[in-house]
Amino acid sequence: MHAIAIPEPGGPEALVWSEVPEPVPGEGEVLVEVVASAVNRADILQRQGFYNPPPGASPYPGLECSGRIVELGPGVSGWGVGDEVCALLAGGGYAEKVVVPAGQLLPVPKGVDLRRAAALPEVTCTVWSNVFMISHLRPGETLLVHGGSSGIGTMAIQLAKAVGAKVAVTAGTKEKLAHCADLGADVLINYREQDFVAEVQAATGGAGADVILDNMGAKYLDRNVQALAVNGRLAIIGMQGGIKGELNIAALLNKRAAISATSLRARPLAEKTAIVAAVREHVWPLLDGGHVRPVVDRELPMSDAAAAHRVLEESGHVGKVLLVVE
Image (cartoon, rainbow, N blue to C red):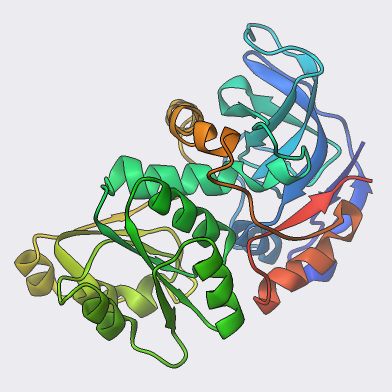
């Protein structure tokens, strides 16, 4: 089979469509023939040599995919050869075939094209686990989403609105904010021109955001705490703005606030299985009913993964960029 290998870390040109050995499913695993994968920031870090796959994972990038099951490993039940699925991966999505633990499989939602289903696993699992399982966003509360036009952001807006929350977003252009508004965002903040702390305070009558989903890390740490409401929850899922920040403990104590920081890729299988099960229970009915949808910016050939990485690095996209096996 073919997969995107990374012989040496580097720029987008480091991604090479190569002939590689076909994987074999083990106990509790299935082999999926990949139709599409999606590009995530973690893939860029891996390409650059900063984010190695966890032990035992595929060496190829790709944290999610969609496709058809072509082989069942020992001990797998509830799935069959030919089933159309999408899957959360620890790696290997940039390939013609990938081995997946059965607990990380999801059926393709009703009304969603098989290719576009590749845009769902990573964002739904990230948003549901952080915003709802950890931060417990409730109806009537306010969620602030940084990077509202990203794959994560577009899903966070939709899921928060689906449960009856108010949503504020930051983005860098009017066009991106317009896309967020189309998805239901209530408060639109251009981070290049506006102070998100002041805008959130104004929009909430001075109360602040109950939950903040943050992809920036260090750069926004102090201002995120300022923007939190009393009993607020800050969920950090990225570090695009650096890894070391200064935290005002007094401000955090005064607000009785909490900070969590998570990643999906290196979690134990049991934790990923629990998250996927929760997503299937709570998010999939919303997708099946058309209340939530994947947002896809464009589809590119998987063999040209370098072009897809350039799109992500230029940050002009809205939603997910897909890699399609031709």
